[in-house]
Amino acid sequence: MKPTLLDVAELAKVSRTTACRAMNNEGRIDEETRKRVLEAAKSLNYQPNRLAQSLRVKQSFVIGVIFSNLFAGHFYSEIFRGIEEYTSGQNYNLILGCSDGSVEKETELIESFQARQVDGLIMTPTNHMTPEAIEILENSKIPVVFIDRCSADYEHDYVGTDNLLGGKLAADYLKQLGHRNIAVCMGADAETMSVTDRLRGAVQVFEKEQMHYFTIMGKSKARNSKEFSYAAMLESMDMLKSNEATAVMAMSDSVALGASRALIEHGYRIGKDIALIGYNNDDFCPYLTVPLTTVGQPKYELGERAAELLLKKIRDKKSKCNTKIILKPKLVIRQSCGEF
Image 1 (cartoon, rainbow, N blue to C red):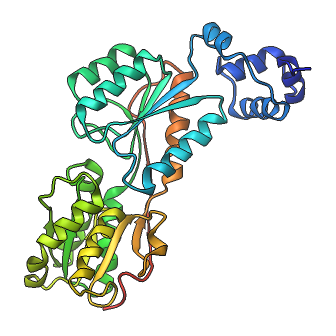
Image 2: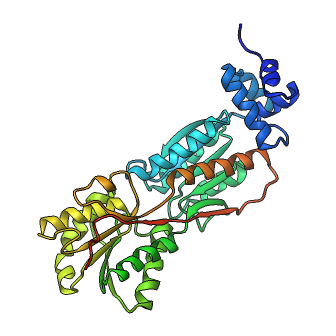
Image 3: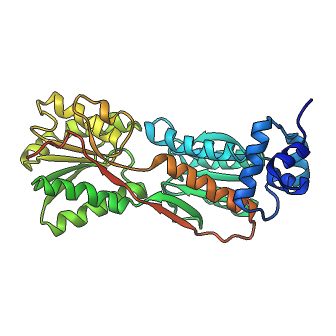
């Protein structure tokens, strides 16, 4: 015999009404009670009728997720895992889209997700959202949480990492090792707010400590960070030598990976002839021939906190925008910087 809502209520030691509200995300129920009801439902393998539930509470129990680049590496997959594990525990499903950095595709995805009547959106925005995308979000009143990147075009809630601090951590570590001439490899996402903040943080240290630095921008049309930075570093070998650079600071681990290939092809020994530091602490970093020193971001927690914030907004329609949750990065020291 299938378990009923009454069975769930009895196991959770709440009334049937409270159990119903917890399952439907209705009313003001404290998180501990909601969690107890959901755990009881899970242990009994209770499956509510989603169609009836959606009609009753006028919710789809679906959240849209839009990332700017799904295939850039470990970064977004870990964020998505944090989102998925939190939302599935609250009886929500996800639909996922990738804008690939295109404002047109981003607009199409927002429009598509609105048509599917998602209850909310978690997204990494492009640098400049289109007026059409902003109009859709404002008119539909869909709760939105931006993750990793802010937008200057739309008032929003945001969960991210302190990239300014992250840039300072990387630069300060290179200073401690005695480096005075630093090449900063920007990568394909050089114009995003997260990357420009990292650079600003690093430059504050460089200028304070009177360290010389120069940026490697690149001219490749490749969207893949590894391909882009590989080509950029190849183009910049003369600049690297003329500036007597002893260290390369990469704006992401994927950028570091592409740059390292170019450096190795030109006879540099990573961690011996030149230091290399990345950003993100992607899963491949410890497994490189010379394990990569990097600045780690709490990727899973970013996703989890974004999902938690969004569900609070969905449950409390009167909550104001502009909540900012900023998590701290940390330096992860391996062998790629050596000692100079």
